[in-house]
Length: 467
Image (cartoon, rainbow, N blue to C red; front, side, top):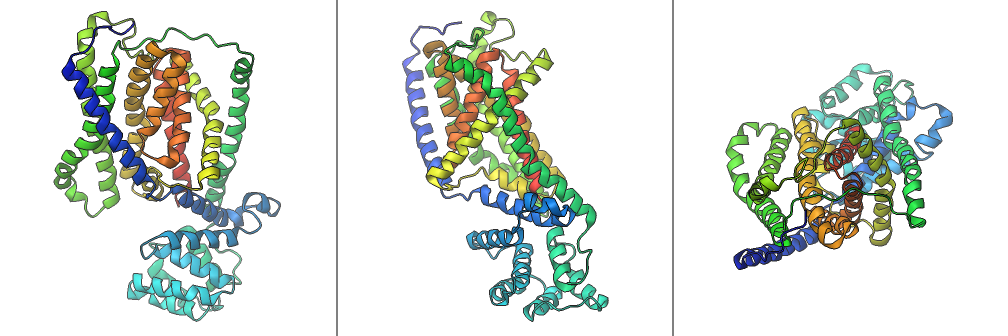
């Protein structure tokens, strides 16, 4: 249904302009601040290197160069050095111990000495005996099991499987079975999932892109259903997204809600990761409230004009076609997003600015925290963001400027809303894929499923890399 041609009241126009100006200032500030945030890319690469070294004993010899690389220990040493150099804090004891063991293994005791000093300053006195032994150089202690137990037992609760494996190899150089075979086997399965599976999905996505690419080259447009959406004017859409989502949701709600949540979450001070997970979930729920209330108020007078399947055109059924379309478009957009990310790194280097939630998922060990992060990323965010960007913004723009312009502009707004310079282009490409699905299917439900699958793919990859 075409939007109303009646001019909105002057007060509403002024409020929309003010909201747009505030939104622009907040987004510019957020994008600039993102340049100061670290990138999660380095942490992901470090985790993959650690996974390669942990899985190496479970690999057949002929596959080691292919899956672990001929210099996996050297590459891990470089990654750990870069990670600790970029960390403004004292460094993780586990990572300090890993790097010291790798440098001692490479006959570089002079480089490990400063690391061991930092390590001694962080750990309790019960663990100093191991540090002292490593400062004097790794000794062949295979014939002294009680001595080994006395050195390593105080560390067992906090050592990662890889550090335990490296420590065993340092203390007992003649022992052939260092490391847990079950952990090594699981590490191998995770390594295959994070290194080979994405490559196979990329190839499959490229294959699925051939038909639409061929039609585009031949200038044969694919038939699309009528674009149905709420008949809101640009002032209403600006008030919804710039005013409701950005000014009220992203700015005002955290300022008001975060202090109120502190006493509520205070009993969880002993488990800060769980506390952080619940805070992320509750703040996102709070962020959703203002724009959804504004949207409900905007649609209430239009209830009698509502078309079949509603203004937002969810149309979840038939579920099979919605799921198939969502999965197919995830696969098709995967190589395009990967290529755009590669282009950003080639042109700009690593601008940083990754979503902080990625680092939280990568380091969290608490199942309740992970459940909160997962529910926020795979349920709330897809439902909320698709409602605004593909349910309201795209049809409002498409009814005026055409479907292609609606897809492109809504994708740009979607990318900007995530406030990350480094992720802007890949997010815009993802937004184009989501908008294309909305245009082709005439349904919003598959877009939510596609968004959820995309976030779920990222979330699963982070969990597989977490050690």
